[in-house]
Structure formats: structure tokens, C-alpha cells
Length: 288
Image 1 (cartoon, rainbow, N blue to C red):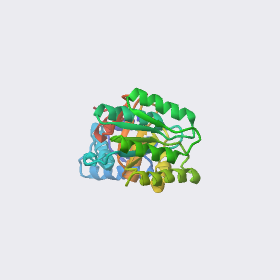
Image 2 (image 1 turned 180 degrees about the vertical axis):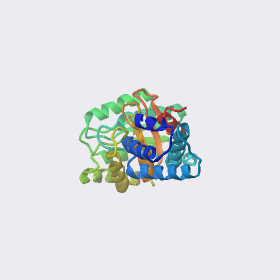
Image 3 (image 1 turned 90 degrees about the vertical axis):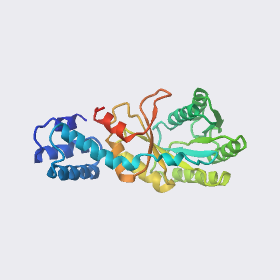
Image 4 (image 1 turned 120 degrees about the horizontal axis):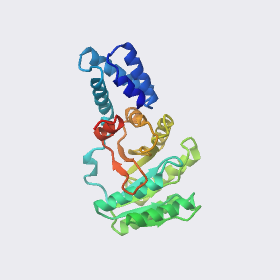
């Protein structure tokens, strides 16, 4: 965000300043379309004299971005009358932190109360199964594990039936990482989605995509492909504690209007936070 801060330090709001603002927004991973939308709104407010140079420009940009991201805020009403058990599929490409995120989510739900079941259905990687088991122990929740090389959809089916018999509140299903460009791998996720519907009507109730915030513009392609294939109901952004520019979050919100459920800000068990637009934009611009 250093380029943006340089723009905000300018004493005059002229054409050069606005061009620098657009360039800085694109460099911050907002993408050309989103940056253009921000710039058009800034121009309108400059003409109305509701935005001035310096802190006024910074506050105006923050306000515009919060408006763009309003559709990314989950609705509180969604948690009312959830089915029992509520079934979540966590999906994403390799290396984004799905298993870790699901473990943190299990911990988060355990603290809230109710009984959760963690399902290690990433049967492609034996390490993922063991990792899920470790996270289940740390979170204090039960874990159902598949066998390496086994049928992931069958593991998920058995887990949902077991959760129903045990009167569990939540079923959190880890899936194998896969490239969004590989059709056969996406078909396996669709198979799991269909099989879960046989185990419990309307399951899975939610499908969340884990997205690495350091990915940049490739993240847009990931969201689009998974959404078209599965019908996503939410996103989880990871690795926002590192070198990520953060702008990809705004770009995704503008492009898809999908709720951003949580953000990962570290490696600790408590480093998964419910997404909040106001807090995110304040942190993005280091403005409390």
C-alpha cells in the first residue's frame, strides 16, 4: 500500500494524482475493473467537493471500498434455523491451507458450543489425513478419517450418516486440493456433492472456497471455476498475515459478491477471524 500512501500525501487533487491513484490501486491487486470503478466514484465526489486531498482522499477511498465490499459481508440471518447437522464442504487448490483452516474452524465452533465432526476426506494425501487428525485433537472435536487412496465421496457419505446418528451439530469436510483447470478433478468434487445429497437432503448446505490472498489475480480464475462447477456459498481468505497486498479481497468481492466468511491472519489456532469489512479496510490502510 506504499504507492497509495504516496498518493494520499499529495497536497492537490489533480489529473496526475488521480492517475497515480488508479495505478496504485491496480498494483495493490484490485484489478483494472475495480480500480476503474473506484476512480469513477472518486471523480464524482471530487466534483461534488465531498472528497479533498490528503486524509480526505484516503477516507473517501476507504468509504468507496467499503461500499463495494458490502455484498461480501455474511448475513447474520444465515445462522438462524440451520439444519442439524449442518454440512460444510471446504474446497480449494493445492497449498492454500484447507486442512489448517478447517482445523481452526473446528476450534472456533467448539468454543461456540455444540458438537462438530471433522472429516478427513482428502484421501489423495496421507499427510492430510494425519494433519486433520492432529487438528481434531487440538480443537477437541471428533474426526472421521478415510484411507489413503480411498473413495473420498464414500468417506463423506459415511461421516454425514454417523453425524446424524450421533446428533452432531456440524460436519466439516476437508477435500483434496485440486487445480481448478483440471476437469476430471472437479468432477470428483461434484460427485461428492451429489453423494452428500443422498446422505442428507440439501447437503452440503455450504461450500466454501479457501483462497490464498497472496495468489493475486489468479485468484479470480479460481473463484470463477469453482463457483461455476459447485455453486460456492462463501470464501475463506488465508495468509493475510504475510506479503499479501490484500487488494485481491476487494476484487473478489466486486466480481462475485460472495460472502467472505473468515480470514486467516496467522498460524495459531485462534488466527481465524470472522470477516468484517470495516475492520479489514481499516487494517488495509493502517487506519484504526
